[in-house]
Amino acid sequence: MSEIRVDKISGKTSANAVTVTGENGSTQTSLQQGLTKVWIHLDASSGTPTAQDSLNVSSLTDTAVGQHTVNINNDFNNADYANTVNSNFDGFFWCPTGYTASAFTINIYTGSGYSDRTEVIGKSCGELA
Image (spheres, rainbow, N blue to C red):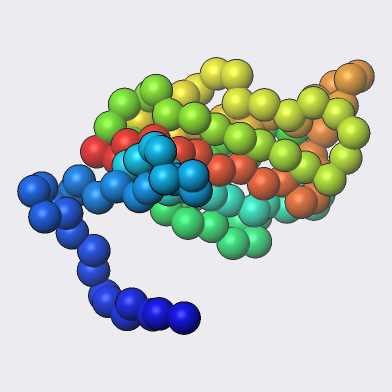
């Protein structure tokens, strides 16, 4: 097995143009576009959300019960990035509003109302500014 050990990868034509060939060899994907740029693992069960761990998150704001704003350290290029949120319970969780280049909102709805939960995970993919 071969191993490549480097501290930095840059494209030959353009420093930020690095592509990866797909599994079947027929497609290429931009490495930068395929990376998660922001993620957070939060626990709000105490009523005050705390980040258990995160990447590229500057702060976490408790906007209401079951509603949390994730503030991004290095902003996205625009508000057209993709978010995924999940939790360890049966209910609804989503990021319906509040998308900006610098923040997004995680809302947890249990069917009868908003609720603070443990093990809430959110991640975002897109182009950083």
